[in-house]
Length: 611
Image 1 (cartoon, rainbow, N blue to C red):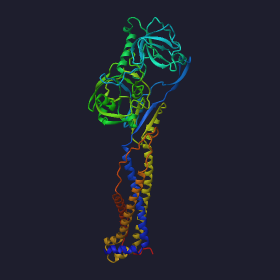
Image 2 (image 1 turned 120 degrees about the vertical axis):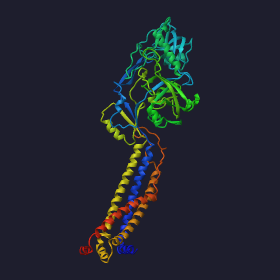
Image 3 (image 1 turned 90 degrees about the horizontal axis):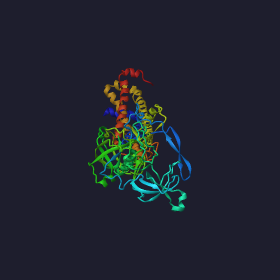
Image 4 (image 1 turned 180 degrees about the vertical axis):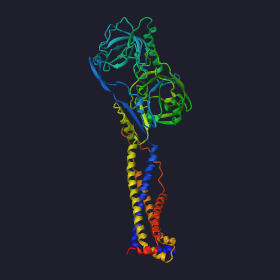
């Protein structure tokens, strides 16, 4: 106690220096505490946000050229010009599999399958792409304009045509249509269309006609996307019906087409994926799991036969979680997404027969367990959306090859090709991608605003580091300088105490106790003040938008529902840890300088003192 009082007495003799030391140490400790608090706060925010954001990229092949298509219009008696994208070849998905890509999921090139399930209704009403009829013109005529056509039989379709009707028929888009004869019967596929203006005086203000709808030519392609040769031209829509016609190959093809139309309302779109959030509908929240669960990583990896179905379909058919669906996959479509092909009560117009004129055989079948149901938007005819009654399965659950059952093919697009990478690695990925020099594939990223969030947090991190570095530097300078003033400059005091019989330990306590008290008080006050101040500032920042609610560099979305789940550090605990570190540093510096004094003999200290 006497030694402590002696130490304090010496400090009071240097009150100005002691007060200045205390104030500077409080300020430096406060900077350290604020910087440390901001760093921990930013780290906690990033950890909390990490699980709330996902960065996905999409790949889209650009057309090699744009080609003009000239289409004849029978009403205008002229050609209309349309632009069509032309691809010399399709870039394979393998170009995305390069060293250093470090995907978290994917990349995947999704197709959709058609699954025939006769026990379930795809649509509440029958589907009609067009109508297949037999009939004859009322008189011999070239249908380069609307002509009268007598219907004798309706083979397929559920439109407005009935047997015995006389309809207006025009081979509207053919510049050189063939002549039709009244004494012959023709089978043809027709679809409804607005009529010519010149018909108004005969049919009123809303004239109508029926035009050819080509369904006989197969669109089948091989695994490389090359069209499989077909003896029937793509624009073939009409044949003469003679005795025994439907036993011929062409006649059987017509009957097969009719059969596929009857099956259409029982054929469901099925999409395979390696992660449902690689599908934009789930990523942007337009679709969500409403009952049950998502697929697990193990189910994706093993290719388990599990599925997700729409909530509305399950309610309509009385399905529950755990029930099984008997999927029977007939065809694969790589040319468009299910969301584009199947909307509410409308389906895309692709031919469901192969190049041999036969209905595609089932290439994969099995029972799939319903583990989840999804709600949200579906059936809006949106390339990036979900189809009406779409069923989702793990990609690896399709074990058999679909190479002989591909009815359409196309390039990689943003709606069917995607992958997932770690948040905050877009620039790193694009740097590696640019080295491949693939000019006709464009990568687009969606990160839900993570890039903006990360930039804002990084700005705060740089400020926090600057404050911390400034605080630590100032702490060491203050401790070193004032320890020199209070200890190394007190050689005479040390020598006198030693000459009076003080042991080295007593001299150590006499020199150390006073400055230790100042270090303790200054570091504690500064750290506590800095801790509360950083908490107040962090609280105000947290009440404002800390990130931009956008889809990163692409399209907008609302991510305002992201919750900040991090817990701020207790101010007292944070202040105590910071103060302890400063006290420890001060103790080491002071003890080292005292040791320098104590290891010299008293007479040498007196002889070398500075006047």
